[in-house]
Structure formats: C-alpha cells, structure tokens
Amino acid sequence: GQQLNQSPQSMFIQEGEDVSMNCTSSSIFNTWLWYKQDPGEGPVLLIALYKAGELTSNGRLTAQFGITRKDSFLNISASIPSDVGIYFCAGQPGSNYKLTFGKGTLLTVNP
Amino acid sequence: SQTIHQWPATLVQPVGSPLSLECTVEGTSNPNLYWYRQAAGRGLQLLFYSVGIGQISSEVPQNLSASRPQDRQFILSSKKLLLSDSGFYLCAWRKGTSGSRNNEQFFGPGTRLTVL
Image (cartoon, rainbow over all chains, first blue to last red; front, side, top):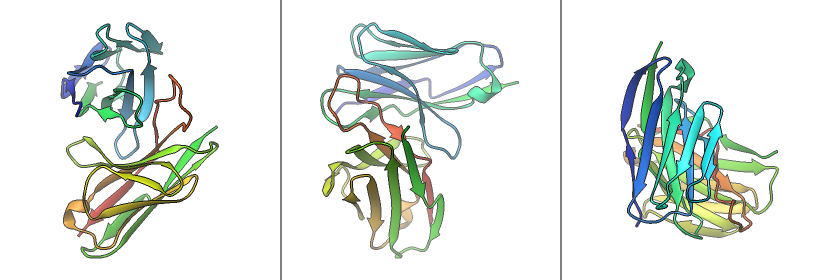
C-alpha cells in the first residue's frame, strides 16, 4: 500500500523562527491534509489541499500540494510557543474512504 | 456545526477484561466513521471504518471488533483485553457524500486506554 515519508521527525527551534516540514509519497494522492495534535488530544485539521500546485494559507501556516501530486509541505512562520505539538500529513490516494498518515513531526519551540 | 464525542476519556482495565469505547457524532447524517489507535510511537493506525449502519471494514486482524448500531454511533469492543491493546484510541468522521472536497476527517478527543 501507499506510504508517506514525513520529515523531519522532530524539530527544536527558537520562538520567532520559521519552520518547514514535508511529506513525500511513492504514489499519487488526490488530497493532502495537514493536522496538528496537542498532547492528550485528537488531531485538528489545519489545511486541506485538493489540487496539484494549490497553495493555501491559514494564518501563519502555509501548505502546498506538490505539482507531481506525490508531495506536500507545511510552513509555519514566526513560530510561537503554542505551535508546540505533533504535525501530521495525510493523503488520500483515490476514491476510497481511507487516509494514509505520515508518522508526524514533533515540534518544540523554545521561548 | 458538527461535533464528535468519545467516552470515556481515560480507562484503566486489567488484562482479560472486556472493553467498550463509544463514539458519537452530532450535526451530520450518514457519516463515514473510523477507529484509529495511536501508540507511543506517534503513528496513527486505522483499525476499522464504516460507511453505514451495520457496515464494518476491518483493517488489522486482532482481538478488537467494531459495531455501528446507529447512524452516528460507532463502538469499539473487545472480549478480552491484552497488554498490547494499551494506547490512545481516536474516533474520526468524514462526510458520507462523495465529492472532490469531502476527504477531510475530523477527530474526536480520544480515549486513553491502559491495560495492566
């Protein structure tokens, strides 16, 4: 089945720095989703991408659907302490009902 | 607006005991429903999904089972828990209608299960 490679696995940054993380796949995806999970809570959807090349922003977050449809990235600008958490990418390869998830990027922001 | 509930929030159970976790969704009809398990290693493992009442698809063979007795209710069960069943269980829903922008899944708050 499809697999998603998400990198980096973890990041330690200073408050105010910009962050970039990405996911790649060996297969084509029709949808890319980015989630954030705070400790002890369920993942929350940040951004949904449905079209190759699509670039979407949500506040300080920006995500793009790669032209090849096999990758996506998420950028966070001017990080703040509340950005701490695990960020997951997820993709849907076709018309089935399931998502494939990356293993997550653990973000730590030092004040 | 739609909301998703899970209970209990936390559960400590002995090995060999039964399990029942419940998930309900409000504000939508005929959703697709999902059960995931998240181990300490962070990855999300899809356990079951359902596209309608009584329709369950199993992704991973194990001692867990799922049922959907009502449109917006999804239950995860076990007759006898194993130590390896410990983890964070997440329920999610998705719009049941087909469409190019209906692939988003929305997660509940989760249930932390510890099997001792």
